[in-house]
Structure formats: structure tokens, C-alpha cells
Image 1 (cartoon, rainbow, N blue to C red):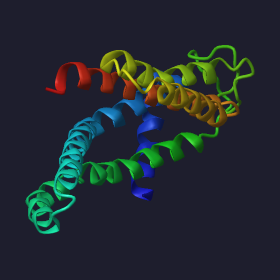
Image 2 (image 1 turned 180 degrees about the vertical axis):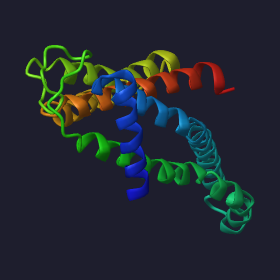
Image 3 (image 1 turned 30 degrees about the vertical axis):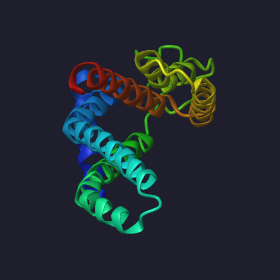
Length: 208
């Protein structure tokens, strides 16, 4: 973990020398890391889709053979290998987690009295946003995926679940961002914006 953290710190320091602004450097570093993880993230999405498909098949088999345990056991055995393979998405998520945690730790440890052109109304990126503009932006990006899924898939019967998810996402985003330093808020917004764009491209262009 320390190797990853030190590598990110070195990259961030050099990005600051190039772009001359901590806020822009944070955006660049976050995007670089997200682009590096993009193939893993796409694989994760594909594996999760496969896992859901296999789960649906297994549930159908259990319902069909619920009164015939011997036939049920034989049918489930056919999907055992396929079901285990579908858990690849979980492994990919484990690979990504320490990388993103290290990136978060690097940005959290920044000690500077400088501001950023990205947030000109705050003089120091170690301070929180007094006007709550960044938390509002982050909240928007947190609910956009749910709204897009609703509009794209057009579900017929789970509107109440979607509303509940929207409210929970809004509360979660508000709680974690309302007092965050500007540097970390920029990281979270960049991360959320990239994730939304990635999901958008995947579902519209790459899913099939």
C-alpha cells in the first residue's frame, strides 16, 4: 500500500509542477488512475451482469424442480462452474480498492495553503466550501446514475425503490462531502463524474 501511496504522491507533486495548480493536478491524477483501472472496471461490470444472469437461471431451476431434489441437484451442478466464474467481478473490485484508497490518502495528506482556479471562492484547498457548492455538485453526480438507469431501462414497477435509492444517495453524498476540504471534494467529484461517464458509455455503446 505504501508503494502505491508514495507513487501517487510523486506523480501529484510533478503534476503540480507542470500545471501549476493543486486542484487541476488532483483532477489529472484522478483521471489518470481511473483510466488505468478502466479495463478492470469494464470487466467487473461484465462479470456482474453474468453473475446476475446465472443467479436468475439458478432461481428458475430451483422453482422448476422444487419438488424433485435429485433433479434439482443435477441441474444445479451444470451451473456450478459458471456461477463461480461470475464472481470475477468481486475480485476486480478488490484489485481497485487499495489503489483508490491510496489515491484518497495522498490527496487527504496534502499540506498546502494554496487555492485553486477550479474553486476561486475558497483561498485554501485544505478548507471546506463555505457556500456548499462542491457538496451540491457531488450530490448531483451521485444521483445521476440512478436517474439514468431509470430513464434508460424504464422500469414499470419499482418507482418507490428508485425514489428511496435517490434519497439515500443524496443523504450519503451530503454527509461525506459537506465538511470535506476542497482538495478531497475535487477528487470525489472527479471520481463520481468519471464513473458516471464510464457507466453511460458502457450501457449505451459497449454492453452488447
